Amino acid sequence: MLNNKNISPQDNHNKSIFYGWFLLPVAGLGLFLSGPGQTYNISVFVDPIMEDTGWSRTLISSIYTAGSMSASVTMIIVGRLLDKYGARIMLSSVALLFGFALLYMGTIDKPLELYVGFTLLRTLGQGSLILIPTTLVSIWFVRLRGKATSLSTLGLSLSQAILPIFTLTLVMHFGWRSAWSLLALIVWISLIPTTLLIVRRSPESIGSVPDGISNTESNQFNPTSTLDNESDWTVKEALSTRTFWLLLFAGSSQSLITTALIFHQVSIFATKGLDANLAALTITLMAIFSLLGNLFSGYLTDKFPNRYIMVISNALTLIGMILVLYISNPSHALIYGGLMGFGSGIYMNVTTVIWPNYFGRTHLGTIRGVATTSMVASAAMGPMPFGILFDITGSYSLSIVLFLVLPTACAIAAILATPPEKKRSPILH
Image (tube, rainbow, N blue to C red; front, side, top):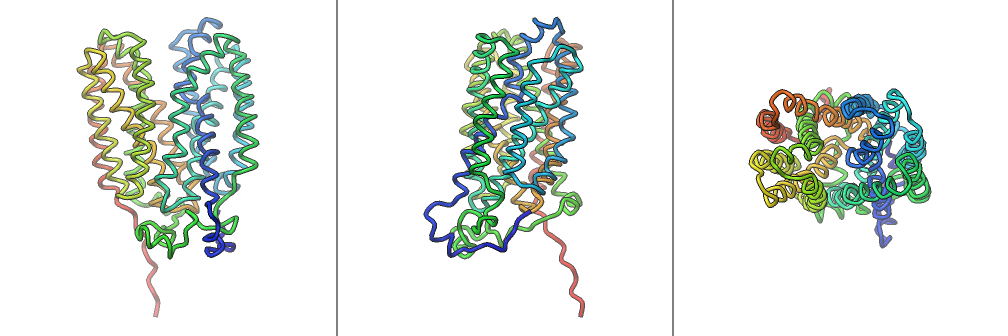
């Protein structure tokens, strides 16, 4: 995927601003506009669709889970295409298709059509518009990868905080069908032109180097994080390592827990005697603290072993899960929201950065495509066991207690996920 022929460190040294910094706003915009395909924004449409079609919440939730599961398997294909064609072609193409998917959502009248729509939204929005921008940033940055990733993924935190309110306003003023169409126009007008004008495949493709700093210069700053020290693994090689599967488990399990808790948050709070407005406020607080956790993690992941940062994220999730068992007043709820949001922000950053730090940039799209498939599938499955156990017991306590084992297991897996080392071929004499 990467071409080193045109590297000119000396020429790059004379440039005042590294071109990679100009890509961060575009990556952030892509992440922001993934929102129409994310759970936090799709939830705005659920009640209007129910009122218009007469479908039950159970039917829509089941279709949503099925669509999300179907979308997860496509991420491997998206990753391979990203490695082959680069982010410029892929991001603009996905934005175009995503717009059509949003238009299609405004026309649905049958459950099967809703399934197709949800599958498209989750494939193009929640999956591809996360995978492509974050991979782009990882290709352009090595020494400053954590910081650059944290800055670009601010777009996702802002999306979670802003887009649902904006979308609700559109629905109230124009109706839910027209709201989908307006979101499509926003995606097309804002993301496609900026991608085509600004995005480039890699620093090597324009005669530069990652971070805009040659390896000699980079060694003066951080000798453990340079292009020379970064090994490029094929997908087959990565899959053969224990580290890959440990990271996959740690990342996917936390995705399952977080999605389950957010999906059922209003209902969980109701069982504690807390109203829906407080639940909504807590979700907003989560978005704010997620932004802070993301920035904090961006600093840490450039300085310290990434697997220990994953442990911090899992520890915060564990504390948050214990706290939600004992929530009894608004102050408890806000503390819970802050902890979960901060941990989620750390998780967002470190699970993006650790893959290229461990397995390199050349096959990053495909490797992260495999990882994203697992994470999206886990997120899709997360709410189901919580709902089933609630229907049986009338409480969420049992499901939360049972799932406490997961962040603990994830933390252990993260500690064991040491950077992989390639086996060197024996030298024949």
